[in-house]
Length: 421
Ligand code: LLP
Image 1 (spheres, rainbow, N blue to C red):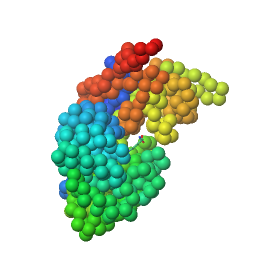
Image 2: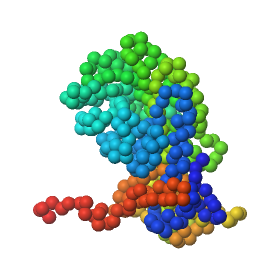
Image 3: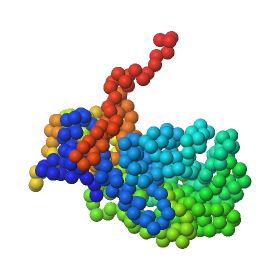
Image 4: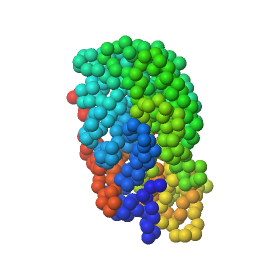
């Protein structure tokens, strides 16, 4: 459920008409709903009630500081995957003890930044990385809290580009080598081994792969404990999928996911961390765009928008589906017709949808991409020297621009010309 609904024939974000935001900031733009963000965070938090837990929002999904602050004030921790994300979380006021550092290639500089600024734990991905964390910690006279990410070799049954838990993927250490790697970690004086980390992929639409992985984590916890490790925290990653269409085959709910976690791991008495990103932000955001032209092709009609693949890359990159709706509510019974919905960028990949049924639209009409809050703005670029589009946060009847559209001068002046030219 989200807070983007039609009221009196027009699409609203909470209590603000989308058309009002468009008039104020211009198109295209991203808009997020505070109530939806908080609702989704709370679904996870409530799902783990009764267990010692922390929901660490995977901020790679949508990392504007206003979003981070909204969630952090509700009690969320953060999952970061780069030094930049770490600093952004800190800038948004998230305390270091609520930040976990994931990612397959943390550099010594990033590790130093996090250790100095305070960190809940590093999720270690390999032995060489473990050695570097140890070395940096010793150099700083500190002890780094770590979990080790194990690769459980399960099929997440999701898009190949976002599956991470098979042995062929670059993530984690093979679970079969865990004893050896934990023994190495325990021997390093700059590390304190506190738990296990696992993350098998994103946009999972069934519980089964999670359950297979978490059962393996449960077995591993007992084995490592018997080998003398004080395993007291389990980081279970993110990945629970969201409904991208309004069909009936919705993914499992956070409450079902939470119940499964308690069933598979509850007996171990560990603190539980989860790292959801998409489910918190995805359906809490829209990308709003304007029709520039309606072009009649030989055998099809095109809606040419002012938004493009550089603003929302998911359809081009993962063949992802986003529902696209007219901001002015179509009259009941109005006849829909198929359009190819495209952006103005100079490549055919700049196609959001093919032969998508839409109500009749004309130049100047506003449309909205649903489920665009996660992996939308954060994956955008300035390809074709198109400025990054603004982000807007709505809260009840208020809205604020939380990232301005840069001017062309700002973009162009970022280049520097070597003196020989
Ligand atoms: N934790 C780790 C270690 C991750 O790598 C990820 C996502 C998450 C948590 C959050 O997963 P989520 O709950 O959001 O599924 N750009 C792609 C998704 C990439 C996901 C990468 N890792 C997309 O647009 O579908």
